[in-house]
Length: 338
Image 1 (cartoon, rainbow, N blue to C red):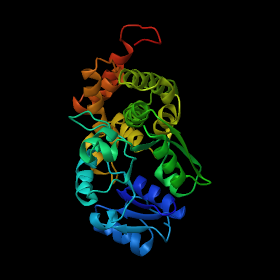
Image 2: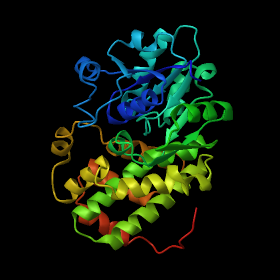
Image 3: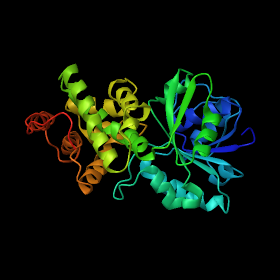
Image 4: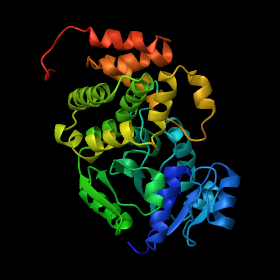
């Protein structure tokens, strides 16, 4: 484990925070940045002012905008680009891996639009089953800025390979970052992706001034929607009751650092979505995931009314109060239904 060379592909806030943990743990770590100026900032100043400002990074952390250099000799590759570019970034990475088969870690949260694939499925398509079939998914309630400041954080590692999950656990774990292992990739990935959609809904509700009762209802019923889809696709209900489900949902729907909640707040207050997104440096994954989630639910015959309401607001320009009225006037149901 001490001899691993780790390439972290994606120098946004989360990728930088994860790479910094690894470097601080004494792992040989290279951070690949799409923007050369970000890599230069990390190399010369031990900072990523664009995506993770005010955090001093470990002196041992290397950074480069050269993919070939980042992957040279890598035994572990962490994919942590925004979900909509994971395919293209990892296709490029694959051209430099040659015949090597590094351990792949997926730390991006989202569902690919048009294919409706989870990130581990995208990696298996791009890199092949032999390389990515045993990939490890890292997910859970984790703001990058807090992890980078060494505040206590706990997440989940999911993999079909217990050996791989335990290996990654050993690479990352320290006195402020705790990682648990399990085998449910479906539940873990859907929980991590879909909680962003519910966070948009919670933010819209708060932006409208609808109160904490409404937010609690959206979070709880949103978790039920995520669970219905996850179980239809083979996920486990217990996963959604853990860090990758309710833990991540609570954080993203209530935390002030949540980008998706902030977008929802702005939309609820009447701001234009395109203007809100244009003013952000980082990606609010929930906006794209809303479209993919709606398509995925429709294809599998799973009713997800909150996801549908968020879609109508973001993509069909339905007034948020009208979308709420439609949600509240739905036919009465038992609390548990499939």
